[in-house]
Length: 345
Ligand SMILES: C[S@@+](CC[C@H](N)C(=O)[O-])C[C@H]1O[C@@H](n2cnc3c(N)ncnc32)[C@H](O)[C@@H]1O
Image 1 (cartoon, rainbow, N blue to C red):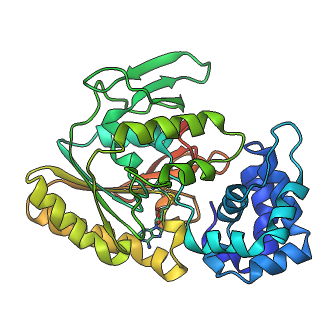
Image 2 (cartoon, rainbow, N blue to C red; image 1 turned 30 degrees about the horizontal axis):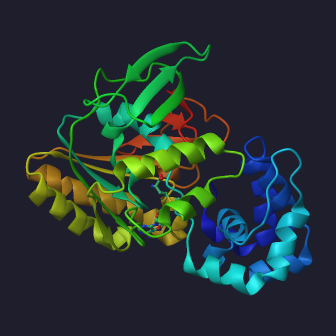
């Protein structure tokens, strides 16, 4: 995942997105992004948007929201182009009104080995929580398989098998727990916290899932149903300024619990200065918690270039474009962006 300020050069970003991110994951998005990169008329429309709104995931989701047809067998760039060019005022309005808040519950499978190694009970604080699906790692079932596809670990919630089962292929000796962690607080901060209990939130989140990823879409819909009415305490605000209040609320709501601040696919949305500041903000806030005698940890799951100081500590090589998984600033492994695979260093 590249930082959003790279979108200053739209054509280059889409060309790179087609080759590096969509290839092998979505033929539709590969063709659409490659088409946009060479289409001056469409590039001009996108260049009229604020930089952070030019991203392929948002533009393609908005186009699909307004009817751009996808076909798994032979997707055509023309299907995207006609909606963008023919219905630009409507598509533009949707792009400006909504954001790519893709909430990927599958990421819980690659976060779990880190969470489970911490002393509980846990007070989770997710910055960039979107609808908060990753705040419920104790409500999903997990199936971990080795590289030969042999299942070697299976975990279920205390009250039985979840309708959401997360499959993850593991390379290396990831420390999988015997049971799911005890979560006593679910809070966070987001510029735009999403409420799953009504409206078209779940439908928009499903549109953000890439066209060919039917399994992810079904899993997302099931996860939204499971936690639609589960309370979370996600504050509206910027993570750089809102973290202190989120931690304070967690400490009141769950005294004695270990505070765990975590994030995945979020820090890329900050500008360069913000990305640079974030490690100091989070470690400073957690040091204060530790000074009071409570447990406090930081888990990061971001593209390798997003938090270079964390990625540089990895003791094994990055796999493809997998996210760097860090605990308290130390990289421990590489995680597929949707949680399908984990390489433990
Ligand atoms: C791609 S979504 C990821 C959601 C979730 N972390 C996950 O892994 O499924 C990014 C989220 O970060 C939020 N976000 C982006 N910049 C932020 C900021 N400066 N402060 C707080 N939230 C932010 C967005 O609103 C969005 O909900």
